[in-house]
View 1 (cartoon, rainbow, N blue to C red):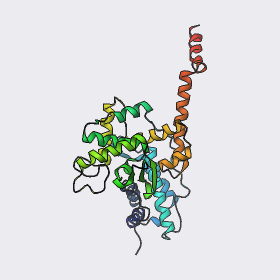
View 2: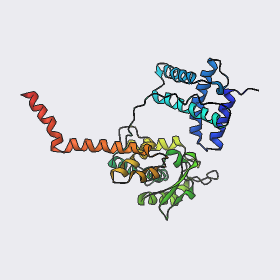
View 3: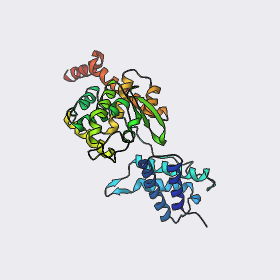
View 4: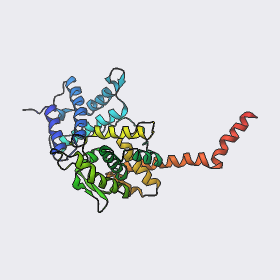
Amino acid sequence: MAETTVNQVQDFLDHLRVERGLSSNTLEAYRRDLRRYTRFLALRGTTDAAAVTPDEVRAFAAWLASTEYEEGRPYRSTSVARGLAATRAFHRFLLREGRASADPTSGVTGPRIPRALPHPLTVDEADALLQATDPSSVAGIRDRALLEVLYGSGLRVSEAVGLDVDDVDLEAGSVRAFGKGRKERVVPLGRLGTAAVGAYLMSSRPALARDRSGPALFLNQRGGRLSRQGIAGILRAAARAAGIDRPVSPHALRHSFATHLLEGGADVRVVQELLGHAALSTTQVYTLVTGERIREEYFAAHPRGRLTSSRSSERKGA
């Protein structure tokens, strides 16, 4: 009996979940992208992914780039590239498993994507954000500890959600995080972060804990594990209280962690380890941010930087 693309995709997703240990959010992204791919192949009458040709993969990329996910809102180049990356991973899986004789994506290139620079907080903004929590309330003590962990250790929001009480070592001042693929790393927490988490464990968490709480470190008002949405809400409230008038996401604190380390003189490879990046190139985007900031500071402060604009004005008035 011939294999079907739907079954092949499900086997690939099972492989990602069981053998690679990818998070539910990453799995859902793969599922969404490959559902579009399966639908496209079905429209062309292709029901076995092993029979796909490079021309069909190129046609899929072109189709994705020309369609809209909502009326008047076409897929961006980043979405097209991500869909093509999921398709490539799927076909490589089939080839490795001996279920296809070739990889039709090997010669197909995706759209060029302009490199987007992160937008970190300034050091003063980060400090104001951390100070904006209420030190007299149960929730405020928890929020301060949470934000200290996100900014002081550079954790992904999914890593913060997954933290258990035993993952924090107050004596060593460190936190154990499980990143992509359940890869484990131990990150320093910092003096202020250690103090904030210690205060939370001493007074706030016991007040929030219920029978259902289990080992979860950060708890919501009902005693359950704090969710990604809950953390995003806490951050929005803290940003408003701090007077920061631009959106601040949990990932912005991770960006700020990396940028401020590099600006302080940390080696990029050390920052790579702290962030849990598999590739150095992923970390190096933060060096572009600090380089851009250096240029801004130079042209704003150095007389030779300001001289050009003043002379230009003089010439225009001559």
